[in-house]
Image (tube, rainbow, N blue to C red; front, side, top):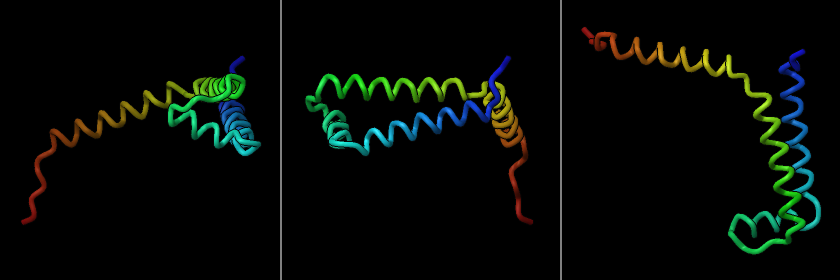
Length: 92
């Protein structure tokens, strides 16, 4: 039985909140800045950060609705096709 989209989006929000709260505790935010600057960080910190990031990206992947993306891509393609074949606008 498929999981409702609302529940999948709630999971993304929960993982985002989890990561944000973790960054707000202790020196995690400073460690992230160091990590992004390619400075050395604690191995345990890095493992925790990578796990939280993986959890978030997995939730985003599960919540992604390919059918919706395909419809949007088709609509975008149709708009571009119409634009290309339409005669130029003239102001008379």
